[in-house]
Length: 266
Image (cartoon, rainbow, N blue to C red; front, side, top):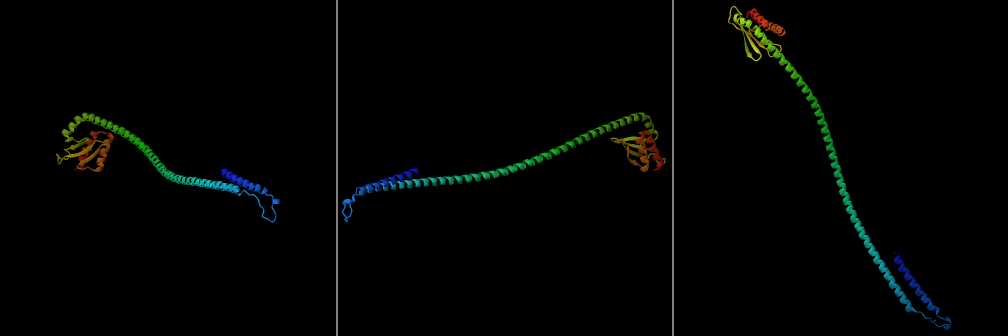
């Protein structure tokens, strides 16, 4: 812009020089030498002025042309910069949209991961609680198994003791049992494990060969009569088995049982 003003100022200076040159020509004019009423005569260097004016116009036109070209060039540069800026802006808008979409996807993925983490933590908490419950249940079952094993061991020991007592009693009662079998018509048979069948004959005077028997279960601590033939009164059988379980005197039980069959008159 300063260069353009310099050209304009230079042109104005040249125009001022031309005008001053014209005034110098007029100063050389002597009006006293001209007779009135004739047309005054003066010397004016018009060609020199015309040359200066043409030079000025040429330089001024050159200045205007150069200024126009510079303005056009600047405008083209500015338009190119605007186009590049718009293109860059469009590219930036596309990138912004891409990153916003990416951010939305990451947000959704983060939300899903957070939900999965919460579900996993909840599952872990449920499994932990279930494990604790199962651990408590396992400990209770182990205690129960231990107690049951102790109880079974105690029952086995008691049964072993009972068998030992029965064997000892049997050895002691062997002579008496032989007497019973020979003279009173009684015999004892093993039906199955822990079950005896006690058979009596010579009970009824009308039928000495008639058999009277009971099946006695010895598997539990308390003995139990499973079957009686012929059937005695229920109260009589209950009294007999109660006294046997209290006294553990099997010989006495056999005597009372034979007497009950005899008294029944069956």
